[in-house]
Length: 372
Image 1: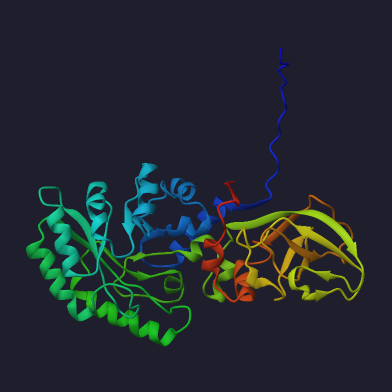
Image 2: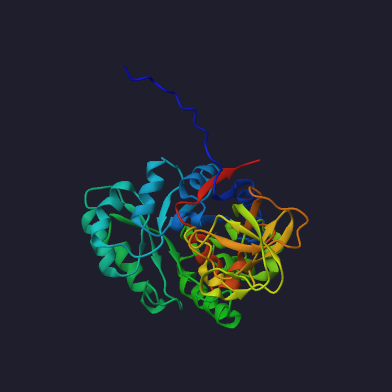
């Protein structure tokens, strides 16, 4: 007779994880609403809420009276609808014809980039309650929408030929609010001129994070924060006003003393100049810590001290110099980025942008959401 054996199991600590501070998220939202005269807010939750966890953030934000949740695709809209959130769901880009019946059935709010798109929605929605929609105005992004000179024609088409569509907003997008102030000021002026005859609509919007921080539209009453909502400012002068929401963490897995002249990581880019205490960290580019940080002066935080990354970032591990720490041991917590090493610093050293760092955090990284 086979003996039954009961094996006690213990959950292992997270190898690499992202702590998501929902209190910081709420504080960032409060700051932007106090800073920006526009009374309405669309929280941008696309790309898994910039890697922060779309479902958890939507549930948290749903009670805060936002005008919309902004998503990039029908796939993301489905995720939110499955949560039964009360905040309306806005689709930020053009839609495919095969998606439009579902958009109508779910009452998601599309943005229209052409008469053809509007006509297709009208035909599909015949016999049903009018579907709310916005118009996208292309004032310089070049990604979608109609030109300002075409706006009166599309508005007239919606008002007189589309009884099953209800125009409730007009929006545009800023391509270089964090890089080109002169162009952005002129772009907003062109937008305000174009929408002036329609400023009675419930939703007029153009400002992304950089736009709402540094500029003002005469007619806009809705802003669309993305990056700044998550505590990273596209404009450095506002960073002190925001609180990082994500802290990417890992653990020291092993600490060893290696002799001068020993090489570290692939390619032997680093040859140690002294006897060195090297800590191996259980995170790499497979977790979203960029390989392009290799040999770029990146640092991590261990026991309150910045420690330089040695050699190339590998898929699952990095090595750091902990020689100057008084004490370090396996199991010590490591901040890869967060409140002490800003994601914008990591992005700059990696030759990319904070948006890509956030959205590149891989699914194997556990998200731990906290509110205090």
